[in-house]
Length: 258
Image (cartoon, rainbow, N blue to C red; front, side, top):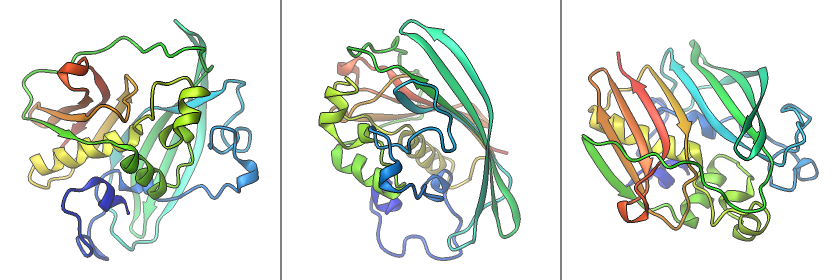
């Protein structure tokens, strides 16, 4: 399901058992089997079971860092261990918010494969949508391509990752309860599309580490630009809107190769 959602020209058998798992595809593994009665009103697992309940109504990925120790393979038995390592309260222009830090260790049959740090942001739901300060798209790109991110792609990615967060597929909830102007493109989907394109640019070579950070919500009604700047052993990547829609960045990714 994931390949059919993110890869152009995908076909059955494109990846088979024993092939290397592409970077960030592990995000479609380890689905949370939260029963329906334990979901919150936004479709997330209700806070308090694992993630803390901090009394704020909005919760989403803020960013993360990953180090790839060894490749994983299709069909390999995987394990994941997660722990909360910190809760930090801050104050922004729209009021107090909190950052919850987590550490994940993903292992395959050959041992530790991925070390991942993740930051989740908790916010109050504002009365109206107030976008963050826009950051212009970078210059000097070695690729700058456009992909469609309509409601079908968002729904399919939600299904592939077993993500029940309504802001990605329930337009009425997103616009009337969360007060966004439209469905939101998943941060992990943006990061995955970027690293897929960067790996193609690098001739299939896989990165040894990457970091990602969401800097602006991206919405279904705007096509998504995938932009890459080559920095030698690293690449600076970002999604961005089209120039006629402001040309601002959405997701930032920095990837490094050996």
